[in-house]
Structure formats: C-alpha cells, structure tokens
Amino acid sequence: MFETDTDGIHQEAATGALPGWDRVEQLVQAAHDRYRGTDDGTVADYIPALAAADPDWFGICVADTAGGLHEVGDSAVPFSIQSISKAFVYALVCEEFGHERIGELVGVDNTGLPFNSVIALELNGGHPMNPMVNAGAIASTALMAGTTADEKWRAVHDGLSRFAGRDLAVDEAVYTSESESNSRNQGIARLLQSYGRLDADPGETVDVYTRQCSLLVTARDIAVMGATLADGGVNPVTGERVVSADVSRDTLAVLAANGLYERSGEWLFQIGLPAKSGVSGGIVSIAPGKGAIGTFAPPLDSAGNSVRGERATAYLSKTLGLNLFASPEPVSLDRATTELDIARSAR
Image 1 (tube, rainbow, N blue to C red):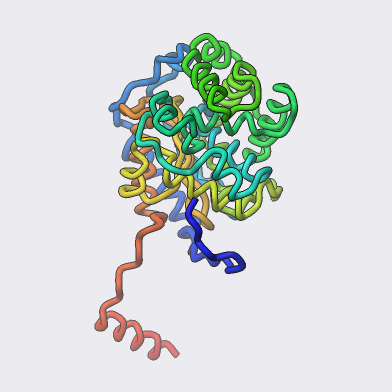
Image 2 (tube, helix red, strand yellow):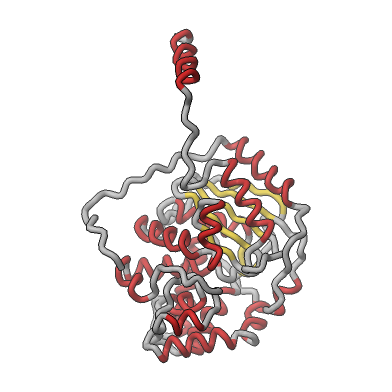
C-alpha cells in the first residue's frame, strides 16, 4: 500500500444532513412509485432457492443516523443477505487486525473481473485483491475470531446481528441449496490455501461463508446496518458501538472501490455512494454522516445487481443530496444581493 504520511493528522468530515422528515418520506415514496413498474432484469437462478423469489417484490428503507426509518413497499420481506454480508464481515476483521494488516492480507483494489473469478486469483499470485469478491470474502471469513469453524460462525452471526440491531436467523433452505452448488467457492478456497493465503480448513471456511450469506435480512435491516457505518460504527437504533469510526471509514472506502464488482466505477460515477449488492436482490448504499438506503427487488442486471434497486438508489442519491462528489450550485451575485436585502429588511 502507498504511503500517505498523515499519521497524527486529525480526520475531518463534512457530511451535512438529510432533508427534513416529511421531505424524506415523500421522496422515498416517490422513488417506489417511480420504479415499482420496472420489469427489467432476471431473478437469480444459479442458486435454486433464489429462483423462487417473487419478481414483483420491491422495498425501500432509508435509515438516518438519528435512528429514524423511512420505509415503503416490501421493506419487511426477508431475503438472504448474500454478498452484502461481505462488507460487514470485512469491518469486523478490520476491527481485529487493523488498517495496514488487513490491507496486506486481503487487499483493497478492484480486480475488474466478475465476483467469482478464479483468473483474478491466478493473475495476482493468489492475492484476493479485495474483500468484496468471493476470494477476498472467503479469506475475510477465515480471519474471524475463533479457532474452530463453530467459533468463527458464532462470531460472524453475532457481529452481523449487532450491525442489524436484532438477532438474525439463517434461511436453512438457501443454506442447503447453496451448499449443494458451491463447488466454485470450494475451489477458490483451495486455491487460496495453495498460495498460503488461507490457514483455516478450506471446506469448513466455505461452509461458514455459505451460512453467512444465508442469513435472513430485510431492506430495513440492511439500511440500519449501513447507517451503522454511516454513523462511525454506532448502530443508530440500538446505540451500540459495533466497530470503530476508523474501521467504518476504511470499509466505506473499500465499498466505493469494489462494492458493485466490475461496475463499481460506473456506480460511483452515476450515483456517488459506497454500496454493496447481493444476488438475492438487496443493495445497501451509505452516505457518511447522514444514513443509508436499503433496497430489495429480486430481478438483476447482467452484473448481478438489482435493477429497481439501482434506479431507486440513483433517484434518492440525487433528490436527497447524497452524492459524495456533488457540490451545491453557486449562488449568483444578483441572487445573493437579493437574499441579503431580504434578510436586512426582516430585521
């Protein structure tokens, strides 16, 4: 990793705030109304249990850092968390190992290849490159606290439940279905082991990872999980600190670079928020200091991202003023003078 020479320099943040409660409520409803009729995309079927999802499900939740929840549609319908779990497991291992060490072990750079690519591992000497692709996620799961698979699973389950603010359950049907069709992940784990990048048993690690991806969440849950990162690691609903502010910052940086896989650059260019998607149809997007958007709609585009979720998030990013790279429009001299005159006359 490159040197920044900023040790001892205080991290400042300019985050602003969400609009007022009623305005957020209106815009969340408007996003749902605008895109609920969109029928583009296909429900994932490479995991048999996911193929049964209702393609018409569509839920949105915006969670703010004060603990407020703005929900519409199917925001309480449970679905398996899938790859969205990668972001939060990464945060947990960052808390354990620290900024520099986890950067060396797992990496932070985009592969430019699909999330389950084996070629990416081979091209980079067995280095996972980042924790949002399957190789990096499996390596991260292996780093969870515990000496046995059961202990690591308990650490994963406890940590993700704390992010959500409630005890999460496993969808046993999804877990069984994925366990019967995860030979590629098993191959990735063995390849990591062959390069000396996985100390734990490959089969047991993939089993923990599969359970991790099978945890049931809702759009509300992932919004709260995202808002926990937005609030510097403090769950805004429970008030519990889950990870540190530094870990939250690092996790959001990795999400910005890699959260939407090979479409991450396009996502950041169009929407301007760190985000993570899952093939069950969920997307969580985070606005530091403000809150997070959780969406759920099963039909996916060719990269495995929810079509309605992408469009609703883009709409809310713009209308709520969440894009990290957007600046307010400059006030013209005439407008500024008029506003100053109005202010003076009101005295």
